[in-house]
Image 1 (cartoon, one colour):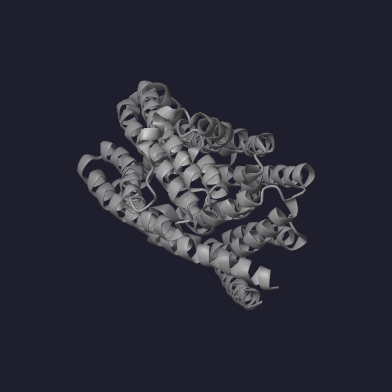
Image 2 (cartoon, helix red, strand yellow):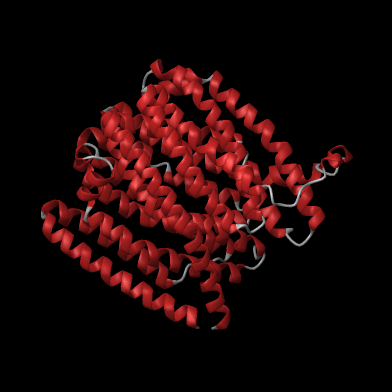
Length: 479
């Protein structure tokens, strides 16, 4: 039990440090979103969501997976100073050219990108400005990956917190002062400020000897980073393309205002999931990478991490679902409360995404590119489902589409990690995921039919699960 207790302590420590900073950063981000909503309404939130997704899409391609491959390489070589320095040099000599290339591509193709995302090229010039955000995202990803590879969990938390605070101040002023262009500036400010703050906290890291650039020793590092990175880039690009495509479908089928309602609901779910997801990325993935040769050890880490993630996320997700109209009104404005049912469906889909993220990191650590790609292709089912459902059901159809596609993706992830790599998710986590999705789906329907009954049921369930998690984790830590 001593080993398990130590592992749980580490998971909970990383989750508390990264999760606490992420919570603060996301609350600051929600304050930014509320300001944008009050200034421009749902349509402004819709545009902001499109612009930030375009930046994410461009960065996911341009970064060539450096944010993941660099962490893996550094985590596996942390005890070899010379290899760590060589890896850092390789990361930076790849990051800067990739950032410039990605920015140039977004600027050159700004018209077709605007036409695809917003259904009109009228925003083409504004999309051109987003190229700055793409370049900044690549540079920020490289710096954060190096911090993470060195195990600087506290610095990662500080970067998220201060970066979000400064970016939010800049974003609110820009939207108020410049209108549509200000919305683009708001999107750019987030990666740009993150990159600057990341460099500030990275200044204490060991420095590389740049005179060794010409000795030819980086070729092997470039190959290793690119081999992993191309796979990660392909899958990350698919994930962000799915996200952008779903938003484009909503925009084209229903308009910018319904898109704003969807983006607002997605952001609230993301706040809750990010508290555990960022801890996964900061601590869980490096730990998996260090034992990638041992399927049994990976299974243990996977199940412990997912147990903590579900235990922490479940009460919050149920509370958000039960109080959806109030949450939307407080975090945005009363005009957003009409999307409460959509938010509840997205919460149910979010539980499945927690499972797929945990399994996905395991596949990345095993360099199982084909399996990872196959699972994300299954997630793309949301696009045709949304296209078919939206005209018939209205906005809530996109929530249903995302639940169905998340279930398909989870099934593929589960199959490939188990059958292909011997990594097993235990029965307790499987039952918890299935029960949460079923309960949250039922709660969405009950609350829609009778708001008071739904809120009471949700409040009781959230308190019960919160108390259960407190007792379980306390027992696990004590051993």
